[in-house]
Amino acid sequence: MNRRKLLSLLSVFCLSLILTISCSQTPQSSDSGTSNTAKDQAIVIGYSNWAGWWPWAIAEKEGMFAKNNVNVEMKWFDGYLESMEALAAGQLDGNCQTLNDTISFAADAVNGEVAILVNDNSAGNDKIIVTEDINTIEDLRGKKVAVEEGVVDDFLLTLALESKGMKRDDVKIVPLETGAAAAAFASGQVDAVGAFPPFWLTALKREGSKELISSKEFPGAIPDLLVVTQKLIDEQPDKAQALVNTWFDVMNFIEQNPEKADEIMAERADVTVEELQLFKEGTKMFTIEDNLRAFSDGDNMKHMPFAAQKMSEFMIDVGFIPEAPDLTKVLDDQFVQAYAKTAKK
Image (cartoon, rainbow, N blue to C red):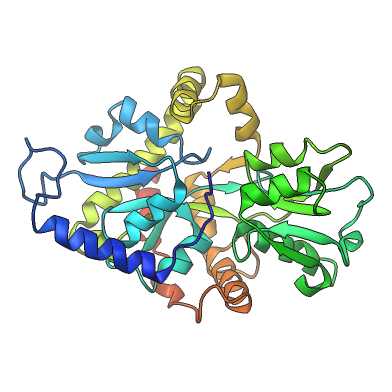
């Protein structure tokens, strides 16, 4: 699954056109038994196969949305790219996606895209895997590194190089989709690869291969988010608030019922409970305190306004976006702030 593949402007346009035509023919609600009023219609939230988003299955299974007075349809996507395309085209009210993808889509999404919640940070699940003879970041100089250009593990590579006073140009970038990049490394075609799960498992099959560095060394660099449309915020802010409230109910459920929570998440992810633990290790789930810190201003990657600026500069440098969107419109902490005030009472 490619969870970091970026959407082209043409894809957004085509999907928007398809949506416009289909909406003129059939009602948008998938539940024909509900009222057509905005109050009764389900809001549709997309999610896909990433450890930080599996907990949404608990909200569905345990009826937590209803407890927060909101009608939600969680729509599962086997492909992360398809979920991003659907949100950008106006087919979803929200989606689970990364900060860099949200920045990339912000200018073209038909209903706007706004991050209102941090589900988690990648804390080791994104890795730079290298050959046996590479022992330091400096050893990467002049080596062939396969990465999917402009996306998260390319960004991780850039951060690693910068930490040692090096630049992206100091290595030989081999631009490949993440799955193909891992395969190229495993077959000996390149010296290093940037990958996320499950692809780094493929990379590590190469004899002598090892992890050089991971997202664990760069806290905050890869935040995974709940992103909703600006339209939802403007027209139904109570539903956006209910989504955030439900998420923290899920976090409480996981803490109080760990075995049952793992069973639900493993079933949703189509992995065993034992395999689930492997991917949970590299995922830092965010508390309300973590959220408040992440949305606040600061001078390092733990603060999303700073991280968003850094990511925008990176994507402009590699030609993924022509210019940065208005980053003040991409992040909205009003809902986590409201939850925090309620939680204190």
